[in-house]
Image (tube, rainbow over the protein chains, first blue to last red):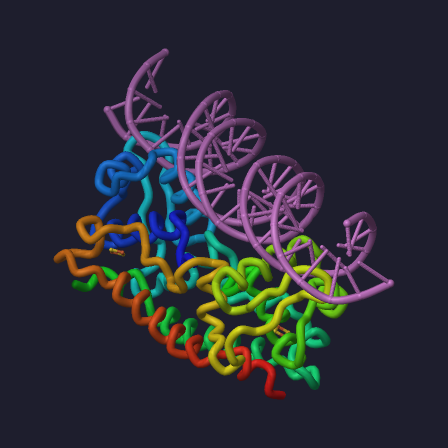
Length: 132
Length: 132
DNA sequence: TGTTAATGATACCATATTAGTATCATTTGT
DNA sequence: ACAAATGATACTAATATGGTATCATTAACA
Ligand code: FES
Ligand code: FES
């Protein structure tokens, strides 16, 4: 079971890197630094741009930079962008099939696990990842 | 993100049902009760048999029954059978790429989330799912 | 002792998701 | 004009998931 996919992973790498750079960062730089396939990296940055996490500048001398402070870039948000809403997605059993009385125990337990997970996840930001 | 797959889900349904039955249960019965595709259910039960969670009896009048007490059938174990080892599978970033100093923050955080999850998961048994 | 109703084993197929490529268009500094 | 960057979008490949199909084996029972 994967918590994060490569999309998310690469995106976080890129964001961490960019949070330590002053000016613009190009795809080329990131590809070099992070050893990620170039077109894939592009796609990811373009997506982050669409989602207003980065801003981009075209043309020669262009590149990307963070649009918002690393403190405000939440990992859950990045996950949401690349993996859809974060959660544990219930189960396939419906209440009528489930343990007697229509009260679904498993569902509740999954919710609870999910809550615990989210609680911890929500505290992770790019800033929190970068500080040694 | 899915915590459990259909395999696991159907398996749990079947186990819950069987924990309430005295004698042998056939695939036919389960298919009827739980509305699951027959060959898929078979495959699942055969797997549970291989993993010593069920025992099986061939021939006319045959079927399956629990091999161990519902109290000792842990959900994590069922997940492991059908989904592989339960965990959050780290990330793809390696320490050298990761946040400075080689200390990988994200990795630790994921571990921590995983621990919380496992702690709760490990308490769930078939028995705990069945008791209203 | 042959038929039938069950599981065992295994190979195959379909669909969805993830991961990644390829291409062409647009912008901008020199 | 050209080169160096991103924007948009369509396509392909690999993997995981969710099943089917088939034949072999076993055992009750008429
Ligand atoms: S509704 Fe999901 S286990 Fe019951
Ligand atoms: S080793 Fe996984 S995020 Fe660093």
